[in-house]
Amino acid sequence: MNAKTQQKTKYPGVYVDSNGNYFFQTEFGIDRITGKRIRKKGRKDSSGKPFSSAFEANKELTRLKREFHKVNSYANYKMTYKEFMDKVYIPYYKTEVEESTFLVRKTPLSQIMNRFSNIVLRSISVEDVQNFRTWLLSSKEDGGAGYSQSYASLVFGIFRKSLDKAVEMQYLEYNIPKKVKAISKGKAIVHYWTKDEIEKVINQIFLGDFYEHLNFVMLWVYFNTGIRVNEGTALCWSDIDLVKKRLRVHHMLILRNKKDWKRNSYTKTEDGKRIIALDNDTIEILSEWKKRQSTIGMGNESDFVFSYDGLPMLKSTISRILGRYANLAGVERIQAKGLRHSHASYLINEFNVSVLVLSQRMGHSSPEITLKHYAHMWNGADTVIADEMAGNIKIETAIETKVKFNGNQSLKK
Image 1 (cartoon, one colour):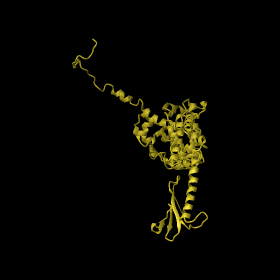
Image 2 (tube, one colour):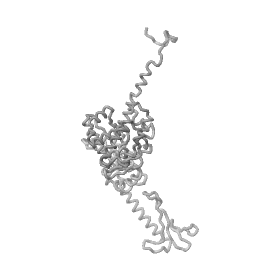
Image 3 (tube, rainbow, N blue to C red):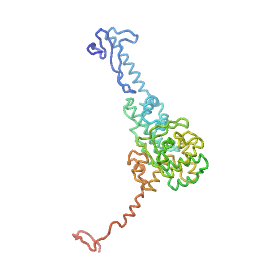
Image 4 (cartoon, rainbow, N blue to C red):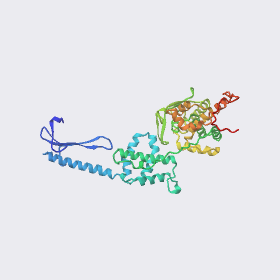
């Protein structure tokens, strides 16, 4: 309605139009979920009767305001942490991260909810948070969670972020967990295999068996390309050019189980999309495996490279394979992601590869990221330079002193 056709009354938010009809029109605030303004307008009371006066319109407006604030403010005031997580934070979080990230975070989110489930959001105290922090960092023998430093840091960090959202949504005035010291990630140690160790592992694999042949191909490709685990499980034969000797990394696999998976047309980061050059040994190994797959009707462009039944390989299966052959070879067991670190170590220690080449091969956004993860592996890489430095500077010193001392020096004769 045009402002010229309506007039204010003595009651805020109550107006009368050009026809003499009374109505209310006002804002109740901001919707904490959508962030949009909540507007209310009406010409009738709760029984459906049109207002006959400004007083009646104001009476209905007052009732609606009281009801709105009672429902919203009181309900939010009594909201438990679990209600907040179920209704607000988790739906929001799912829209902010990749599906693969959310699947990984579901367990720590559940652990936090179990800890604080029925506690009223506004009642979470510094003592509650400190006790949670102590529990995360304590061993099971001491009644704690028994988590690693890095996992405890992850869980506590998620908890802090959830209450950051509660503050942003105005459910809380401030974030209680931030009054307690954060848990540092600590030094994450990712074990990897050296060239000698991968040779010992390969020595335990029997290529005559179809499944063991797959194990060999998979371990070899991961070790010699440095691709991420879910980049490898997403590889199809259309991603491999056996003639130009190239491997295209343009996909990642989001996998809940062997029959519930999705092959996304993007990688962990935008810079993760890359083309990796393959050596002749890897080309020969892949060619032989493709022929082997073809004997059971696989090996087509749309088929997975790491598969024996047409379905993708599970990360848990890869972990079991690593453990099995590590035990047989008598080498340290590593995680699946340890093969990526193995590749970086292999290129640095065997070929003294430059940080730029390694960064591109690993799919990092910058050489700085590569150095952050692998700088320690270049220890000793300058040995050749040090050897060449010897004798490079000609050493010829004076046969007598050319300095006149002023008598302040104390010299022993």
